[in-house]
Length: 107
Image 1 (cartoon, rainbow, N blue to C red):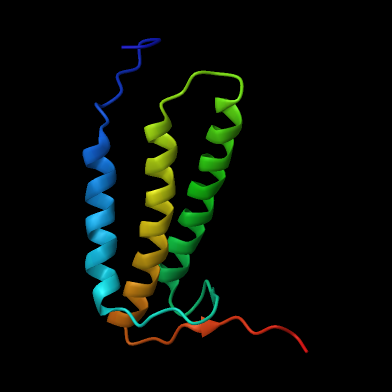
Image 2: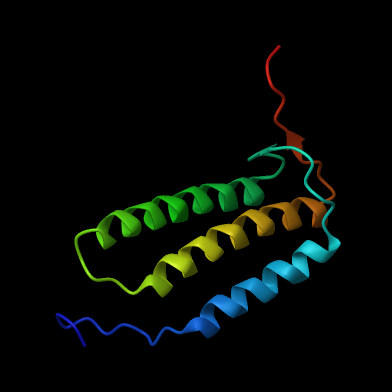
């Protein structure tokens, strides 16, 4: 208990669960050959938005770690969570039979 806030126990197992779920989805997804845009389906796009928020939290936690003691496992978890959300967005497109929109460099 810290400041009257009860936080759940957190361990490497939480990271492992995410990694296993990423691997399961990755098995059925085509390999990435280029960057993809966060589009194709509403739910998939929302996963991309959540992923960017997760990355922002990860960056802020890294910044905080330069001045405060933090549990580095939290940084690792946020990193894997953002990867999970990216893979989930791709998996949703596959399930909905929607195409990924590839980013193309302007000529």
